[in-house]
Length: 130
Image 1 (tube, rainbow, N blue to C red):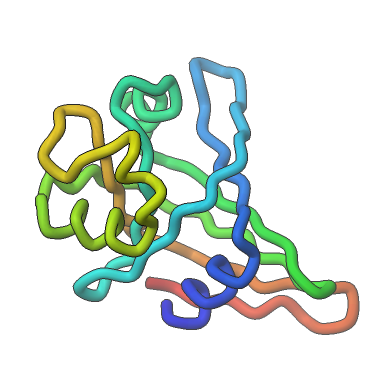
Image 2 (tube, rainbow, N blue to C red; image 1 turned 90 degrees about the vertical axis):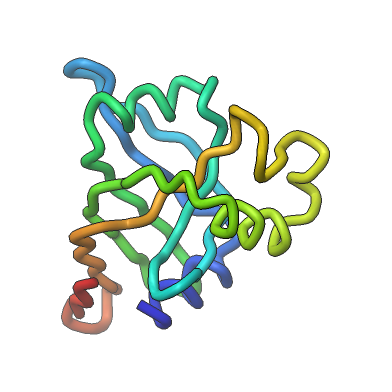
């Protein structure tokens, strides 16, 4: 999990895919946090992506850096723990202009049953599960 976290952190931007009915939805994300042994992302509950995740928690993340890419198939689980939200916001202080750990909008979600696959054109794919 640490290697996955470091790769996503290095990328800065990764892409999150969800579904809305039978329509895939993909958008850039930039938050990734390791807290109490879980890998977290952050969004706002008022956003469509949050609604899509609550309807169907299965998602994929994808990132690319230095000729290597990472795909993560997972379930996203909402965590209402204020400490998890505070940890995320402390690591992304610019978000504190829009979010608070105690508001009704801030949402942190951890990756569950994750299968992360590192790939490149020059090496065999490598899988990490957490």
